[in-house]
Amino acid sequence: MGGVSVKNLTRRVSVPRFAYGTILDETLPRWDVSLVFVGPAKAKLLNKQLRGKLYTPNVLSYALGERSGEIIICLQEAEKQAPAYGMTKRDFVLYLFIHGLLHLKGMAHGATMDTCEQELLARFAKSGVRTTLSTCLGTSSPESISERTR
Image (cartoon, rainbow, N blue to C red):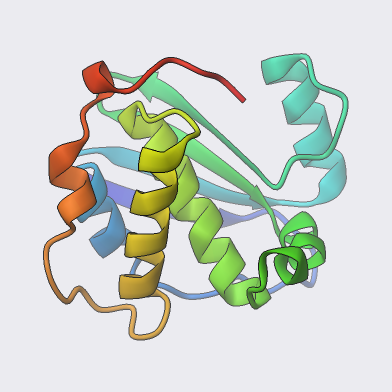
């Protein structure tokens, strides 16, 4: 049985509340995911260590095992970038969580991933409660998605 462990390592920045566990269960059943909220300095350091990139990312995700992973979200970057995506900070944080989950699922950037993100965001952003089964999750598998990294 999987679940989400949420940690806020930022100072004075509140973490939006969502049904993270419900979203995880529907996207990656029986997975354990650590969701960590960090500040810009930590996000930039991790991006350099994990990916060799020198900028502050809004989200990082990586597998830790066969059915476990970690998603790191920089709340300040999310707040800064949300308007460019036409979203509130709250909804953009949810979008980043979904984005990270889909990468853990094996999806690469592209039309399939975009469709899944929008579908899941529409379902969970307003109510936080599951409504109907996601069609995008049943139609894509890691084997059918081209490999492309961020």
